[in-house]
Image: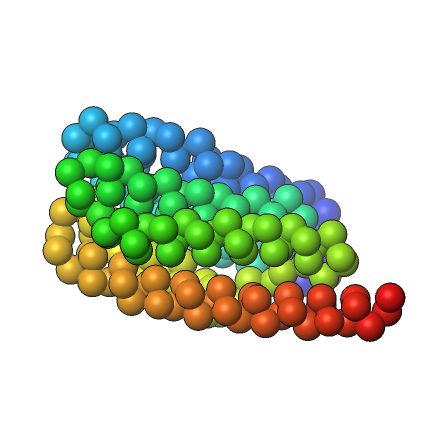
Length: 186
């Protein structure tokens, strides 16, 4: 793809980053819609937000133009979207998962955020794995179904949570290797 004109690459990067930013700005709207009982509108806005996640990655990978901003902002936005909406579902009439599952989800996100920040600082930025992408996709579909108030959404959420924990352990193992190698240097 090296023969792609600079302008096309620049526009591609901008589109991918704008899609991610739009998803970030939709999070409080979705949360508000859920908390005020506007499930239909929340479903539409959440579906659009989830679609932007698919599109921004496709746009960026199409021309192999992943930006540093996108590399950081996209997974952070995914974490905020998933955690924020699950918390809102929990708060609104218990439509979401139970408290223990919510704490596992949010706790994993906090640990991964802290760990990935540290790894980036150490010069070993975290690359998203296929397991992580799969877990995120399953969770997005599960949340969509929970917003639609379909019971199967909760069961799919548990599947996504298991995958999510698996990807968290994978990131932890990679972080441990970086930690051990940095300790050997001192």
